[in-house]
Image (tube, rainbow over all chains, first blue to last red; front, top):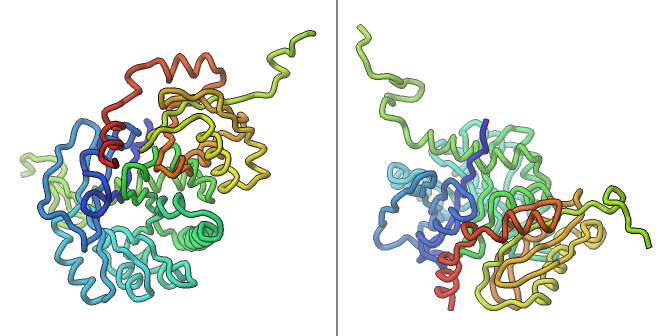
Length: 239
Length: 127
């Protein structure tokens, strides 16, 4: 086991955020990440998707964060974008959207599930998330940019979700949700912050490296992939 | 006066950092923001146990001292720093060590660590 590779799975570039994708990628590389996912909100997609060259040891994944209030329209959007992106994130925020996202196995991550007076998850939804393999996204940006009572609310929601996730073995993804270069934090600092906020060290490392790797390998089948559970590992004469 | 033996001194960790910021920042601004972010995130009691001190800061790089048992908390409170002087800023920790000499040699004199391209780029786009 070498050093784990860290990924930041939710970064917003222009026109959603303030900085361009190459700037964010350069800074993430400087901070020691092995990859980031550009996941603009679906209502603020760039006009043209330019392909980013991946350098050695650093990859930029294509992602999207779907924003939709109506669950049936959300399912339509999921079907529309699923094929073209590596990481599909749903921007939660109401009971119906959270439920629609967690009950759909084609969704990878649910971000910001919290609404009104609830942390966004409950026993039923957590179970659904575990069954469908949808990860819960923990985002840094709101934690960093708020103080006092708002941050206390966010932290107690995080703790409530964490407890449910531990009980039902839901996977977690820790991401920055960065809108600009200044929202990015290096992996070690993100880990320290997560540990101070209540995660265990191995949970935090899993949420930044193992779970993202799983999501990518699930969505980028290898050349020998036939269907779920069936894969040709080595070409050759079998008969 | 006899000097205290090294083994009897309080153990410290020294964190080398670089600051990435939109605008200029002085040492006193930095100290103020570091302290307020630590007391906001950790509370005054734990922040006092961390024993955070900004030892030096110039040319966007510097050293912060903390208690050797509270490195994690210190890192977290430095990560929680978002603004200096009302300008957006990020503290990036380059590395930690047990002596000032070592941390300077290892992280602050190596030109490879410093990457002005990203900084100037991010700064100019914000202006």
